[in-house]
Image (cartoon, rainbow over all chains, first blue to last red; front, side):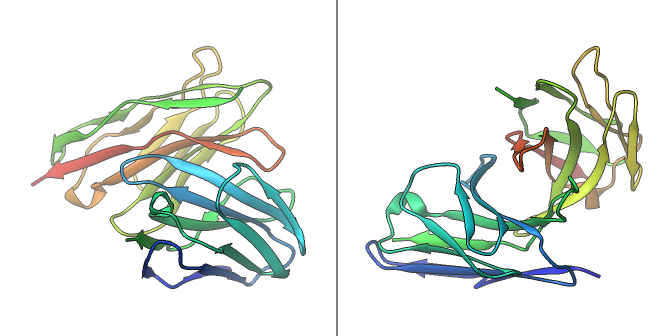
Length: 112
Length: 111
């Protein structure tokens, strides 16, 4: 069966510090991968998606970037965090050609 | 563009009450529709889905019917339990890797 992992689970970072969040998927190959942000009490905002290694599409211009160095690894990064980057970050995957997305457990980021 | 509108929460019910969470959508073509559930501190879990008009998705006592004529996908459950307390998200997928989520509806079930 397929599983999706995210780490860390919780992160507290000062403003201006760098960020790296990691997401890995097991039990499938060539998945579509997604990063979402969920601000407190709000819906999900799609940040990036990837259909293959090295292929990244950005949905919202912002302080963040994403990379996919391996088939089942998706990384969300920032060089300098802003207060507004605080939120709950969710990684998701879907099989190529299939519609249903499956979500990881999320990373809660607090920027102080 | 495509959009999903959910009823605002929170919704507070007593155990064994009937639940309806409204969801309407705007989309071109024929999207697939989903309900996801998010328990506190966790990611989203797929609850049910429907891929074409008049399809009924069901899981764990929850149901939703894809109504194209009213562009709706309302979530229902006949008898809620305290363990159903969570945030429920309606979503649509119309292709090109993009999913549109509603803002979520928080459900609180009291014993």
